[in-house]
Image 1: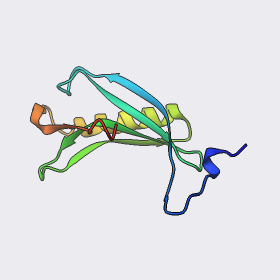
Image 2 (image 1 turned 45 degrees about the vertical axis):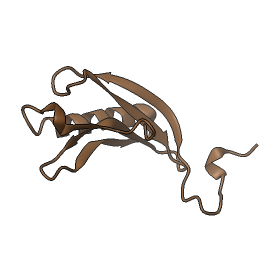
Image 3 (image 1 turned 90 degrees about the vertical axis):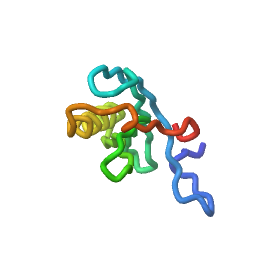
Length: 106
């Protein structure tokens, strides 16, 4: 039986597997009361997490939470902690300073 990590297809640069999705309840900084974290497994066995909620910087570019780990749990923790660090750069965020990932992407 072929493992997904071993699948190689011409023209495909990389395949990652979605292994978990979490709802994170946050009531202090975000206007929505929660955000999502999706965890992907890479072919080499590492895990990367991404938030569906991003904040805009002074130039209007959006920055979300990204984290890494050797387990799903480590990637989840790293992603949340990084996103909270970004959120803590300001005392107060306006709702229009947030951007949600397109549902197609998340």
